[in-house]
Image (cartoon, rainbow over all chains, first blue to last red; front, side, top):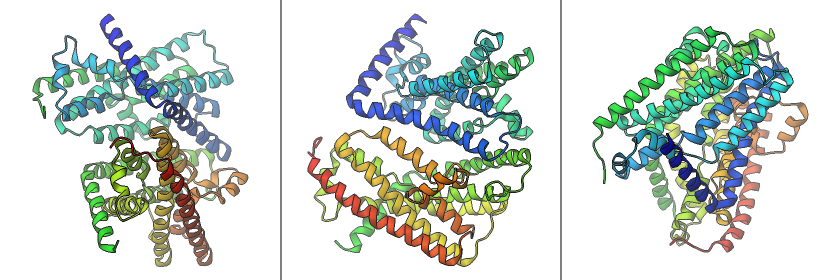
Length: 262
Length: 266
């Protein structure tokens, strides 16, 4: 764990140095991230000013939902989203072998080094939106529900890490992670709106099979309606299962990996 | 520089497109998923609002709008800013400048080559999916023809805007951030996320004076037969005027950018 944090710190330093090569672009990139994250709330405003909105969700409640989504995906973007890209490009170049001989777990090493600075802008925007809507809804930070919210946000981040692990493992088989990542983002588009919008099949899929609903629906529902053991377990158990399956698949992929290029 | 060399360059673009055929196949799966999301979202909003028509759209009209929006998206997809900034950073632009064809023309022909494949592979299945699953109506022949003309013009509009963003790489080198702003704004302001009628009246009026709605919203409206024939021609005229205007802006910016160019990286 200490080693992991040390590698992560180095990776952050390197990422910062890389970004500073094109300083101007870095500022625009951070700004761009923030802009695209404010498009969501703007869309909400347009929907809520022209209609009654989404059933069961008031304007600020849905804003809280969107802020949570931005926060969780921002965390994913910052720490794990680059992993499939990094792995695939190093496999193609025949450089992946060198990670296998490092005196450290390959998966953890890849996770630690896939840091992406611009995701931090998203995290910041997410926190601002969540804080603003919590203020408007009069939800206190000093409550048990908020603690449950934090737990579920962290679980959401773990889900992101597990999903990236799964994509990386699968991309060893299909040797094309772009398509998988694209598919992943499309599935994640579904959780941009609350689960109660969808039919039972999609709700089931997003809660139990590919439990991405943890990135937005469950944390915000806990904050709005209060945390019950039932909701917490429904949200958390699929994540744990998903994580285990992803890591097992990764290990399998590592075992069957035969070097390419080189 | 005759037609022949341009044709050859377009073919190269087409072949680059083939390299991405896997990407096209995946997007054939993902595009219906996007429409499905919007279908469920608007279905719930419509039933909750208990109104037949919201801002000029019925639920069916709304779903059709998103199907058409995806189709227009294939046409107007322009990544020239990416190619240009890569070529500037990698120093390939020096070689391209030596060609007896303007830089703009080289990229334009190349981009047309890429897009034609995307249109061939993606458009027809998405139209079919739209007809079968999402109740897309077959447009009258006049509107359909006008739609095809309009999306072609929209492609040039989108290309020139991307080209302008790409030219900034002559000064800035790395423009991935700027490209992201461009992508988001182009989709949002052209009505790719929500029809433009959902914006306040004042904003809609301002949009008439910006090029964005002519990239997506106007072609869709033409398909949905919401304009009179005369109005259709007027819209096509405005599109054309924008293209000519942007072309001259591009020329001006390019001559400035060319002076800035130092040919590093070769």
